[in-house]
Amino acid sequence: MFRLAHISDVHLGPLPPVKFHQLASKRITGYLNWKLNRKGALASNYLKDIISDIQSKPIDHIAVTGDLMNLSLPDEYVMVDSLLKQLGNPEYVTANCGNHDAYVPGALQRSIDNWAPYLSGDDKIISSAQDYPILRKRGNIAIIACNSAEATLPFFATGYFRRAQAKRLEAILEQTKDMYRIIMIHHPPFANATPWYKRLIGQSRFREVILKHGADLILHGHTHLDTKTSIVGPKGNVPVICVPAAGNAPSGHKPAGRYNLFSIEMNKNGWSTKLEEFGFSKHADGVNLLGSHEL
Ligand SMILES: [Fe+2]
Ligand SMILES: [Fe+2]
Image (cartoon, rainbow, N blue to C red):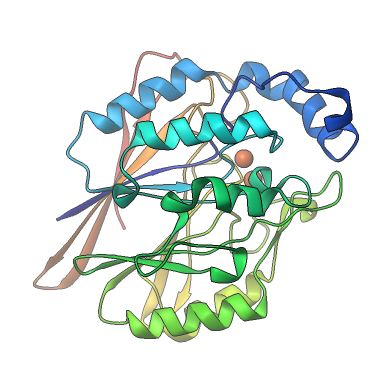
C-alpha cells in the first residue's frame, strides 16, 4: 500500500516586513488582502498541528500543491524553504507552485531556484518552468507535477496550461501507462471551479489530455475548498480532489485546515483508492478524521 498525504495553499505567515518599493507592483493588492483577510484566517498554529498529525502517521509521500507563500517576497522564500525541510527529505515531498509563488514577474523562477530539490523530477534538477511536468516514480506509483503558475496582472489569479506542457504531459502519461498515475496541478482543471479571473486557462486542453491518456488521481488546490469531482478518462471518470488550505482557521467562510490521506493499493480487481480527510472541525478541537471515501 502507498500512503500519500496531500496539503495545499499553506500561504505561510506571518508576512515578513514589506518595504515600500516592494509594494509598487501587484503586491499592493495582495498586501491589503493579507492585512484584511488572510492574516487572521491563516494561523500558523493550525498549520503546525496539521503537520504534526501527518508526521505521526506512517506516510510514504507528501504532495504540496502550491501557494506556499503570499507575495513572493525575498524572506518568504527562506521561510518556505524551512517549512519544506520540516515536512521532510525532498525524496519524500513533492511540491509545485501556485499563483502566489509566481506573484510578480521573475518570482516563479526564484521559487524554482530556491526550492528545486522539492520541485524536481527523478531524472534531473529542475531549472525552469519549461521542465514541467516533472515525474517521480515510487514503486508502481507515478507522481506527475504540472505547473499552472505564471505572474498575472493585478486582480487576476489565473493559471495557464499551455500547449507545450500538454505535449510533454502526454508523453509522460504514455510512458507511465502501466502505473498508478497521480497528477498535481495548482489550479482546478474543471469548468466553473472558480470565478473567471481565477480560472485555469487551458483547462479544456488539460481535460483532452486526460480523456486520451487517462490518469488515476488528480490533486489540486487554489480554491481552498474540499471539493471532490471528476473528469472523463478513456476508461471512466478520474477523481479530481481539492484539499482546503492547510492552515485555515476554523469558523471562517472556507473550510478549516485539513490534509487528505490517500491509501492506494492494487488488489485482484485493479487499483483501489481510499481517501481520508483529517483536519479541524468548526470548533478547533484538534485534528480529527472528518470523512472517509472510496474513490
Ligand atoms: Fe491559495
Ligand atoms: Fe492559488
